[in-house]
Amino acid sequence: MQLTLVTATLTCGGAERVLVLLTEGFLQRGYTVSVITLSGKDIDFYKLPSQVERIALDVMGTSSNIVQAVKNNFYRLSHLRKAIQSTQPDAVISFVDQTNISTLLSLTKTNYPIIVTEHCDVGMKYGSAIWEKLRRLSYPHAAKVVSVSRGVESAFDWLPERKKTVIYNPLIIREDPQSQMSLPQGIDPQKQWIVAMGRLTYQKGFDLLLSAFKQIADRFTDWQLIILGEGELRQELETNVDKLGLSHQVVLPGVVNNPFAILRQAKFFAMASRFEGFPMVHGEALACGLPVICTDCPSGPKEIIRDGVDGILVSNGDVAAIASAMEHLIVDQTARAQLASRAPEVSARFSLDSVMRQWEALLDEVVRSK
Image (cartoon, rainbow, N blue to C red; front, side, top):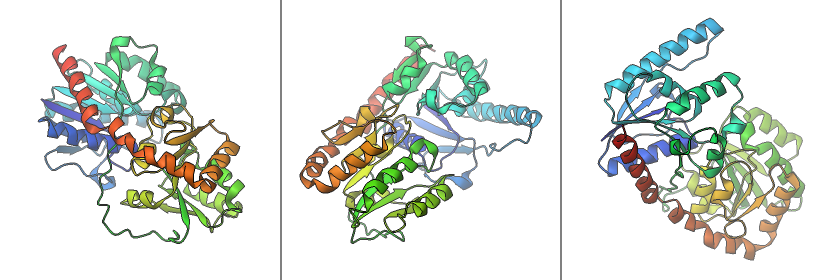
């Protein structure tokens, strides 16, 4: 079976990582896979297996006015349609919100089964009335809308049940635990580490995490908060670190090639996201044996974290509760060890094998009903 996967980019992000993992899973099961990106190859972070046909359209960009935006979108849709048709797919799988809409629109009046995947809580993420309207117009024409958590799926109560399904993302750690770790500048190997990771955006709530850490940092000067990732709020967060007087205890090293080596040496993982979908980093931290403190935000964390078993869920946006949970795991080594002992079970709960069985069943269904 020929599969064509469509995504905006292969930059460093959760959905992009899922695409690569699924691509590997499909190849292992004998599928032929093409991957189309709207971006060019110059901004790639992830690498695809050599067997994959990669088509980089390089049709992304901003428009200075509405007329230019309309022209650019028609140009983008035309090129996307031609690229997909050139791969002669048995099924098309699209990744994430606007790319899903573009894929559905570009394949109007074709007979390809199109599966769109939603990776974030669309009720929180969508800010444009135009894109929301386009989503409601286009999604009924998909063969299936796959949500990565039950929380994400709950936003699609306006779709028929037969159009919807939930398939969790696979959680896989691929790294050599014996490899030497080169510590980014600022990370102190003599201190105890709390790690957070993700794009430096409003969604991820790093400002809340910094405020929570400020409440306890003075009492635990031998602890360091490491925030891995890049994003548009870097300067704002760096300024906030200075204002809070945390420059000696908070490090923002950016994107690192092997974050798992840092995770394995940390004591626990903490996030204060305002909303999610299926936060891969939470699961990856668990797989590395770390207890996870996270906000019970919409959607996904409570479907990964088992409160009191392998982590601690706190109320969304509750800075004091985040601080209290962090202090608890700092001072109570026994509690920390108990949570850590159950954390790696996440790898079995969200294994690639179990996820791929669900994808194979779905593909059989949509291709058979074509």
